[in-house]
Structure formats: structure tokens, C-alpha cells
Length: 462
Image (tube, rainbow, N blue to C red):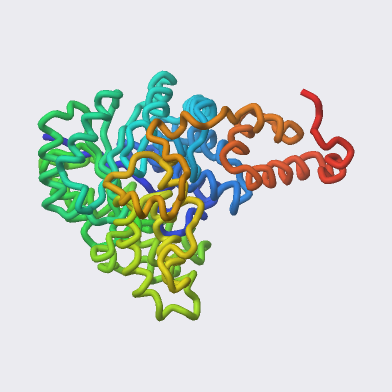
């Protein structure tokens, strides 16, 4: 019997997809001990947008969340999503920040680090992967799945071989939009199994209604682990439900061996917690969105467009039609963070300005200058020069042009830091992190730091 493992995404991608990453750490406590007893292959509970959300919206320290979950789940492998050189932010960070962040993440209890790059550019992943391995973590190399004239199974096979050359402990196929179809998944996994000698894991989303079928065909092809979420935070733009997958595989050669009664008891607790979150009451996020199959974009992009258009909602079809055009202009980047935001914002501006590229975001300019990495497909040089003029295009590793950042970050937070992790929070999120750190210290010591800064603008000497 070949048991299939289930990695639970409830505490990261589940609420990121359905609740805008707003689940508080205190609401995770009631289920942690029970989840630790299930026997999940891993529990994804950090990374992605959770770091930003903790600081920006929840007034929480993301490092404390990691340490607390580690304490209450000693028997389960903890997993996180890391955006390569972007870490858990939205731009490339200098090498000193990447190395220190990965080391501190492992020191604070992380077991598995899933590393990806939105462009599948190995140069943006190597440092994080090597640092994670040196720190003792399980390195899960990731291939981002997308569809376009320049993406096919052969391109994915080639990239996976690059990942294996760097060194990985497992491989993840990441389908952020839910567009991987069942039979394509079967063929991809079959081909990978011919030469990949580490476990293969599949991550997809239920957005298009394909996910459960896709996971099942991937399992039949030999995939080792699948990502699912507990039912109160499953389906819609999240993952298939754990309970359904356990039941579907029970009594088959792929039986997960997980206790459905225990899992159901955890979901009952989560259902009660769910009532606290108004985002969970939005019925539209649970609907199958077949437009994603047409426009090849994550469901979250469409909901963002709807919110941004406001009383100009009648222009939504124009914006949706513009997205694939912009994506083609930019060499078909996969629509995953940060490229979903870059492409989406430019499409939005093109439509509302009434002229394509009359206004151009700095992110698009930086992308065309090579600061994000190598585009998957060719970019018309006349178009590039129209946007960036005579600016130099870098062809080397993007992070090589970045100066070290840690010392400047340490100086900026010297007045408020309690631990080295605070420096990293600031290096990643600047003023958002600084605001959190100030408020934390003000509450703790009842100090008005505005007055302190006026008296000592440079902070205390260290």
C-alpha cells in the first residue's frame, strides 16, 4: 500500500485565500493540539502573506506566531511558503537579509521551507535554498504552473532539473490559479516520476472547480503528498477539503490512514471560530469561477478589480480582456505574487487611462529592466524601449545589484528592537513594521516614543 500524505493549509493558505489572511493567532490555539495528533505530512502555517498581515492588520508579531505554533505542535512538521529572493515581501531583498531571515526562521522552529520564484528563475531561489539546507531545514523546491504559448510540460521538466541540480528534499508543483487540469496533472506527474527521486507534492486551488479531480489524477500518477484545507476553510479560492480527500482515498491503495473522526472534531471547532470573521460570510468567494479558466488569472485578481472599479464596474470585461494582453507584452510571467499585482495594475491603468501604457507603474519599468529576473518569453525590444527609454537592462542575477540592507535596518529600529528578528521585520516591511514595533514598546513601557525621538533623533547609542 502506498499511503498518500496530506499537507494541511488551513493556518496559512486557507485563511489567506478566504479570509484575506486575517486569522488571528489566538483563534488558532483551540485546534493546535488536536491538529498535532492527526498525522499530517506537514502543516503550512507561515509565510506567504501571513507575515505582512500580522504586522499590518492584526497587530501581531509573526515571529511569535511561529514560536507559539511550534510549541503547541511538537510532533508535526511545520511548513512555510517563501518567495525566493522576495522572502515574504513584494520585492527582492539583499543577500544579507535573505540569509539572516532563513536562518532565523529555522532557529524559531520551521521544518519545511517551500521556495518558489514567480518567474521560475532559479537565480532568485538558489541562495534561499542553500541557506535553508545549511540551517538544517527541509528544502522544497517549487515549480510554478502556468499556461501560455511559452509554457509547456517540457519547460517545467527543464526547470525541475535545475532545482534538482541545486539540491532539494522534495518537489512542489504550485498551481496558484487552479488551472491545472486533471489529465495534464497526470501526465506531468508521470513524467516527473521518471527522474525525480524525491517526494512530489501538489498544491492547487478550488477556484475553477477542478482541484479535487486534479489531485485524484495526480495521486493515480504517483504524487506523494497533496495540499488540502480543513472543511471550514476549504473550497472556493482555497484548497479541497481534507475530510473529502481522506474519505475518497479510504480503503484504496492510497489510503491516508488519517482519523476522520478526529479531523471532523477539529473542523467543528473551526466552524465556531469562523463565525467571528465577516470575510467568511462572503458567498462569492466559495463559488466556482470559470472565468479564471478563460483569463488564466487567480480568482483574487478578479475580486480586486471589482473592488477597484467601484461605480465603473461595467468596465470589468475590458480590464479582464486587457490582462492577457499585458501579460503577453511582458513575456508571459505567471500570474502569481508579485506578477499578478504588476500585470493587473497595469491592465487596470491601460483601460481607465483610455490609452495603453499612457501611464506605467514603476514595477513594470523595473520588470522590463530585468530587476525581477528573466521573463519566461521574449519581450519586443521596441516596446521595452518605449517604456524604459535608454535605461540599462540587467541580464545577471537581480540581487547582485543590491547593497546590503541589514545594518541600516538595525540602526532604524535600534530604539524599539527587543530581538534580532525585529530588524528583519523592518528590513522587509519598513514603516509597517516600525509602526508595530513602536506601539508594542509604548504599550509595554508606557512611553511616548514621539517625545523620545524628538529628544534623541538617532535612537539610543548601541
